[in-house]
Image (cartoon, rainbow, N blue to C red; front, side):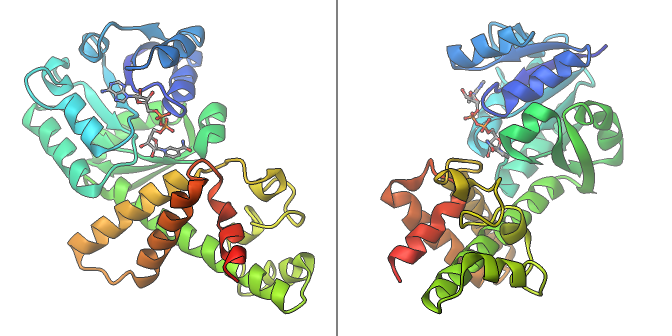
Length: 296
Ligand code: NAD
């Protein structure tokens, strides 16, 4: 049994921490929001009075926070978690954050003599509950090897993508594909409607032809062809448009720093920003088809 500190017990962190408890570990949790603490306690997480108190005595520290500034604020400085940690404690940041902050996270850990891994996830709240997340990890082989048994309790696929920051890089590249492909599929369905094609006919062709992709076959943005997709429940998330926009902004930021030409990624970020600005932040990102249709 390991002692695991879990900082950030929100929609994702709460059920992830619960899976560590179920596996028999001692999980000491902290969040700023009382409701998140209550829900975690009901799942067997031992509540700590502060993040530093959670980290005291912990072998492993998992952070699952909204963004890079939250992660760096939590771990850095005199009162930060790197300073509060036991010697050799393994830090795993599973938040989705910008690549530059991920590098700063690793550098801070290294300066404190602590092993670290960036390990963002995909799979959403459903995957967090079921323990079937995909983890994309960046860090040293030794940190990855130490983290793997812990990550395996929360996920079913764990990929070591490379050195520090590589997990975040893989996450934002994947989600840039997703944002662009959802817009492409949505535009194709709206054009098909204008041309008199039924949704089912276009789906039957494209899902077995060269237009085939996850946004079409698993997450089809029109009701009918894929009964489990959010289109069948008025675009309730799923994966909220606000989170898609967050990830597209991160990929654009990284593309700017790295000098990558991501014209469609930039266009996707613009479209999702406009979609969100019209009150759709909490709707599923596949609802962008309605926005496209309204402009056709
Ligand atoms: P959330 O807002 O539900 O949870 C974040 C939690 O962090 C909140 O409960 C907040 O109170 C807490 N928090 C913030 N600052 C804190 C601090 N200093 N100390 C302790 N707790 C603090 O968000 P979420 O949906 O759980 O997402 C967490 C991360 O996972 C994000 O980076 C998100 O982009 C990523 N992610 C989310 C999903 C999803 O479907 N929700 C999927 C993949 C990745």
